[in-house]
Amino acid sequence: MGLLTIGTFAKASRLSPKALRLYDELGLLTPARVDPVSGYRLYAPEQLDRARLVAWLRRLGMPLARIQHVCTLESAAAAQEIRAFWARVEADTVARRDLASFLIDHLSWKDPTMSPTTKPLGIRYAALSDPGLVRESNQDTAYAGSRLLAVADGYGSAGAPAGAAAVDALKRLEADSIPAGELLNALEDAVEQAKRAVNGVAGPGSPEEAGTTLTAMLWTGSQLALVHIGDSRVHLLRDGELFQITHDHTMVQSMVDEGRLTPEEAASHPQRALLVRALGRGADDTHDMRLHDARQEDRYLICSDGLSTVVRTAEIRRVLSEISEPAQAVRELIALANGSGGPDNVSCVVADVVELQQ
Image (cartoon, rainbow, N blue to C red; front, top):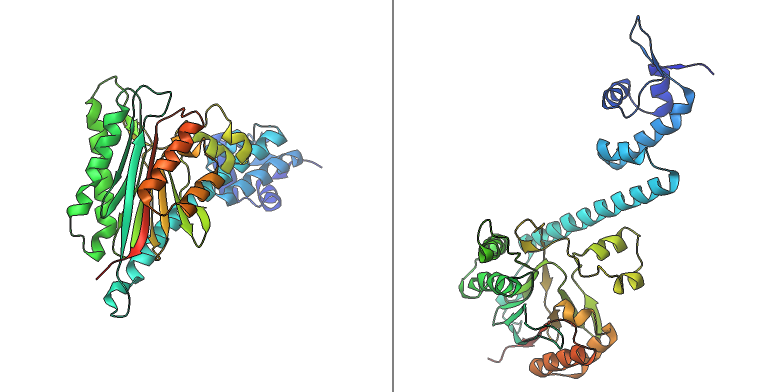
């Protein structure tokens, strides 16, 4: 078979002539020959496989620069690159879905406390932070108040003040009276203040590294609004079942999402603590945000990775299920972490949703 005209090649590859001309200019899909007189582009039949791959990847929404890279790879490596790209798309979609859910719930939600037959709910809580058995200092901050629950895990030479600054920036949410329609904006403003506070710890242009994770929940009366960035975690114990309701922003979790690691491999990976999102100068500070409808007898745990990396989930569930008092529960969880070697600072906040006494 001889060379194909651009029209024939476009039809066979399902790429428009306009797209083929663009890909030629970008060096992504160069014609086999260009007629020196007419300027018509002519393509070889063996170029169809690459053209069809380009068409499929464009349908996936992959950027042209990344397509160009994929086209240089062997089949197995190209498949891995596509898998990684799609995992990123799905993660971004989940983030947008969570924000959409937040907005839908926020706009359509009716406060059950307005009903005369509904019993008002509140929270009882405890927070505790411990340096562990190996670290010389404690860079964690744990806080629990009547409306705000928070854990920050600082890193770098100024990690401790960075974490404390982030939590302090959120504490104003406890004192502020936030109208229902302003909840989302209030949370966003508080996170922005936390970012500025963390960046201000070391000062502009300072070589000192300062950053922190931040995971916090704001009690709104019968809902908990969650803000999360980093690898501290929130677990919900409901009807005897324990659910992790946050997603770690770490390199190894990204590799698990992309199919490059199994969860078992991630648990022992040497870079399991490497963050891909955090509050700090130069860090990706994109945060997750969502609302959770609270039920009486729900129990929430916010913990730093000093607990989750050394204590099995089954043990965490046992403590949360068997120990009724939040203060005793946080002490027991930290004792378990230290009993497993206490290699890191460990912080826990436990909060129970309870009926308020009238």
